[in-house]
Image (tube, rainbow, N blue to C red; front, side, top):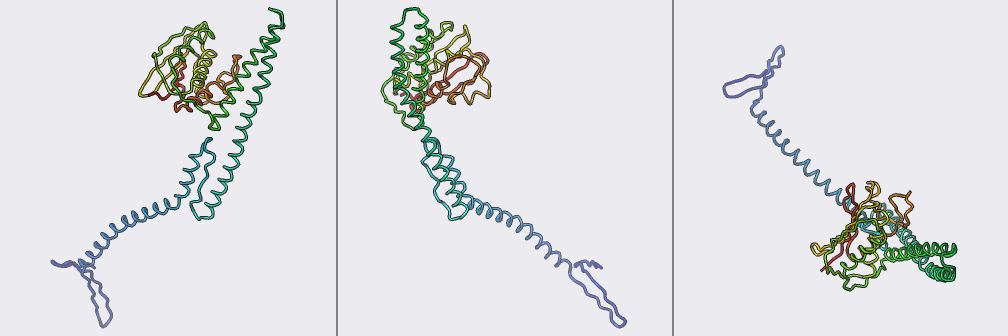
Length: 334
């Protein structure tokens, strides 16, 4: 039973036998005070213990995962132009050592295969140039020696045009192979980008006389770069516009300087580009409309972007609307 007095609460128990009655009592205030102290200490110690345990677990997990994170960072930084990088041995853990060894062996095989493919493309393109040049000379002679307006002359002219297209493809493949190897050498010198853009607009008038050409070209915009390569990039963009512009549409050549950069934008009326094809536009040999009979190798935009990047710039597809498709070439400009 609990017995309350004016000053103390007692918890009492009575034990009886025939001869003895024993009463035992305990001061409950002291007991309750001890329980409260224990409860308070428990409520403080448990959260602190959980926090310390969580911090210790986080530290140990971070320490254990540090080698894995270093491996991931190293692999993430390996690109086509940096296949010679290897993952360092950063841990004495047997499983991690095996992972690093297997990954480095895989990179060895990948680097070897990649360089073999690049060398094959470059060697094939280089070796094809000589026979193609000989064929072009023979076709030129055949055209000159055949009767004007004859079927033979028309046939030789058609073959010569196809041969020129093939030579252009071979030249693009050679440049792309050099870009893949990091050997696309840029001979820096002042280049009048305004003149290149204006010449490209004139060329588009000849390639697509049904297009309305608009020019918004800032005069005298000079950049430091390779004139032949930059001319190739702009002409590839122009050729792309000529192939895919809608009939009786328009094309806009815009060139300006903005925040230390030269921005050349070529826009043309065209059918909307499907969302699925937009990330693939700069892939080699990719064509949006594979059913079109328009001549083209699918290398022009890819090569133009490689040339832009070799100059420290880039070539991107601008946000599209339902009417116009725009590509912007960005180059550093002092």
